[in-house]
Length: 253
Image 1: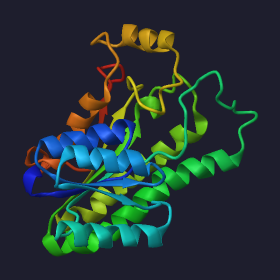
Image 2 (image 1 turned 30 degrees about the vertical axis):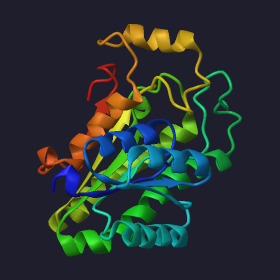
Image 3 (image 1 turned 135 degrees about the horizontal axis):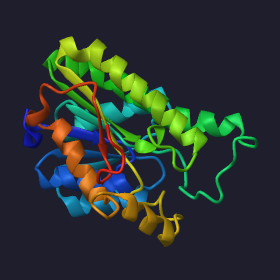
Image 4 (image 1 turned 180 degrees about the vertical axis):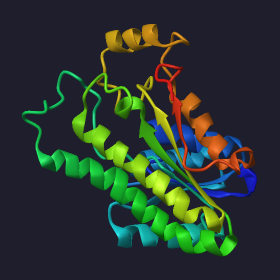
């Protein structure tokens, strides 16, 4: 199914990377559902700017009932089912290496918050999307990961553990859902220049990362979004269970 024929839900789609993904989808003619939790003004402003095929709908993805309502509203507004889900929402987090809790001090509640946002949130959206995807014999699920579980240059313990668990779900789900015509993949970035979450990162760190990267620059949200579009497009129809690292070549494989 071409992107222009799809209804795509982007969780956390109003700000930062999520906004870049929403913009890229709208540019390619997809119908986009921008999910937000608290960023109502940003979500509605973005939807208005991107055109009549883009809507903003509030829901807390960690709550299954809220997600069920999200899918019902999305169908009512778009006139059809959600064909694809981009699990991008990020629980409150800041990439600030100096302020991060160290392993000897970090509390489990921080792990739980990230696991709920990344893993539980993705599970809720996948389960809500499954009936319509199975009925259509078509579905696309793209999870947003990180290159930190391959190269933990900054040990963000809670965030990295949650994204590693999401990669495991990506691979098991791809095996489970493949017979239904549903692909499940992950796109993993490094430090992005710049999102709300990376705004606390010092410029010197951006420059250092750029120096170690083959392309000699830090990946932008727009460049990351283009890779997400690949997995949603017909070009990736035989690709599932994969983790594509999009970081300018910093991490291999």
